[in-house]
Length: 261
Image 1 (cartoon, rainbow, N blue to C red):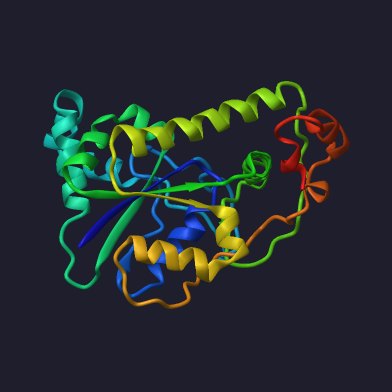
Image 2: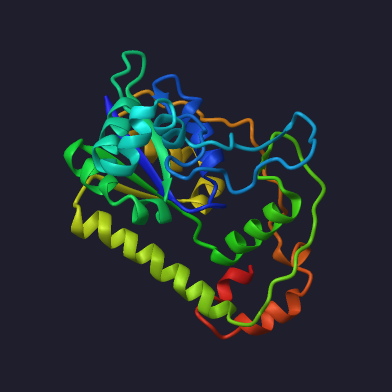
């Protein structure tokens, strides 16, 4: 059985990507919250129709450590061993599938460094899911917070948000450096099996991109992968950024100019 971990950051298409993988009968990739955070970033605060969905608010690790008093004590005094046990139980051998995977955010790997050594010792493959257009990721994050909605199975009414142009280029530059640092960690430092997939490539040619992923995971049966989730934001930034002209003026003639389109 192939073990894999999707390393990403919020608003990069991970929930949609995982639900696509989970639609394959040989893959178990449940659309759970990220492994180690206590709460989801956007819990439900008021009633929503059934087709508007968000992840469960409690993460797998938090549920695991809270399931007994012994584990609660271990979380305080022997966290590394408890996390090893948690990850081993999570990836327990399944005879009905060929690959099992979950997701983790950058910040969680940084906080729970023991995850890295577990990856090394357990032949875990890494799928680095990135969103190349960092401006669209930023806008998507702001819209999700404004709507209090992470994902939906039906189209929703578009809304607009304002982006502060002050320090915008610096923000984007820091995010790009973060991407590059994690590429270096998995490719050069850990030298584990590694595949980078962009959200944009999944949209542009879904079959070709998912075929590449299936090959990486050792899945020999190709089939179209589908998701019940739909895009909730228009592609055009001009349609969803209130002060688009200010943002455009800020990014023109910078390395991030191409993010405007």
